[in-house]
Each structure stands twice: as C-alpha cells, then as structure tokens.
Length: 266
Image 1 (cartoon, one colour):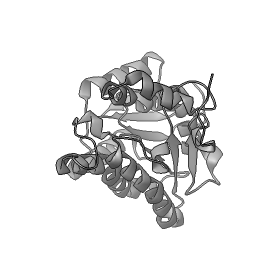
Image 2 (image 1 turned 90 degrees about the vertical axis):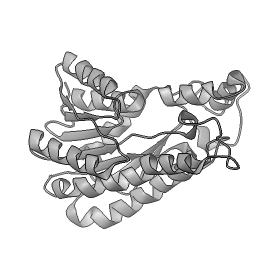
Image 3 (image 1 turned 180 degrees about the vertical axis):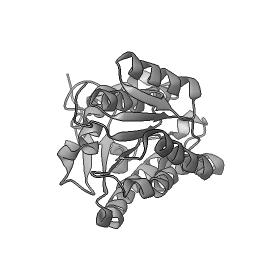
Image 4 (image 1 turned 60 degrees about the vertical axis):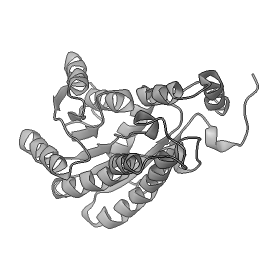
C-alpha cells in the first residue's frame, strides 16, 4: 500500500463498478480508509471484498443518492465508523440511455430528465452539504467531483447527461469559492470515453455500435479507450495533499479529444 492518502477517510459514491470501483481500490492502495457506497448492494460489497483482498481498509454503506435522508445517514455512519471524513469523491452518475430508449431532447420523458439531474448534479450538492460539518474538521479536506467531456461539448442522445455534467463544472467552482474559508478544496476531472459499464450501455443503445465506437476512439489522439485505473490515479492526486494548491479546477482526461476538432484516419 502507498501512503499518499495515508489514514484519510474517503467516501466514493457509485463505487460498485467502473471508475468508482477503480478509484475506491486505488484510494485504499494509497493508504485511504474507504467508504464504498452504491445503490447496488451486491456490487458495492464486491468492491469492498476486492479492497480487503489487497489488505485495504473499506466498508460498504448502501445509499440512494436521490434521497437526501439516505445521504445524511451515509455521512453519519461514515463518521461514526471512521471518526470523520477527509475526502468526498462524487463519482456516481447515470445516463438517460440507462433508463429509456426515448433519449432525444424532443421525446425524453420528464421523469427521466429529473432522475439524471438528481443523481448527476443535485446529489453532488447534497453530499457536499452533509459532508461539510466533518470536512471542516479535517486537515487537508478535499472534494473531487466527476464532470465529463460532455461538460464542454454535447453528444447525440445525451442532452440530460451533458446538461448536468456542465452543471458539475460550475458547481465545482462555486463549491471551491464558498468552502475555501474552511480549508476545503473542490476540484473535478472530466473523463472522455472510458471502458465502463455506462459506456457499454451507451453503445448497446446505439443503432450502429461500430460507427459510434469509431467516432469515440477516432476523436482520441491516443488511439484507444481510457481505462478506469488511469482515471483513478488522477482522482487520488486531487484527493491528496499533493494537490494542496489546486482549487476550483477541472482536469480533462480524454486521450486528447478536446484538443482538436479532428478524427483520426488510421
């Protein structure tokens, strides 16, 4: 185990799979005491088992991020078990293609828009709000939000997702401004196409999966999809004291997608 996060209590939302699981595991490897939280109990418990198999310290607390009282309980249980909270990693997110096949702006059901907003944006405000009393007591408290390349540009059938991820970018800045007086930092990172279950669902919903995959990877200057483990390293850096002079910032991790307007021809 490393020691970049030695002894820090780290909450990772949506850590039952994908980038969240990778980040939770990497935080434990770097010495963090990790709270795995997810709406999917079995997936979350699998993450805890994987961390413990590597001799890491982790517990699982189930939480539906659309319910404020469950978020309050998450924070209280974390503090009761570990004695405080040092890092809040807001990773959990959903995409409209997870919930419906009516994903265009013209026919997206209102309840689906609301669900995406509540998980992707409102929940970040609520988790932050209810974690602050403990973060104030931490030396080196950090909030790490997950935005997206969809915070800057949009994609087909992703209006709600991109709108909420754009909101994450500005919520991160607003949080950094409001909480700086307590020594609490807030930053975000913006992943591109990463090998995750969410990306797979997006591909599964596409009429031409091969064409969509070509568009996704063709826009990368690095000719492949990103890996959750690569994203996890960035999350750990932003959570650690190594980034102590970084606040209100956004880091793009997208293989170079936003650096140009081209498409590779291999």
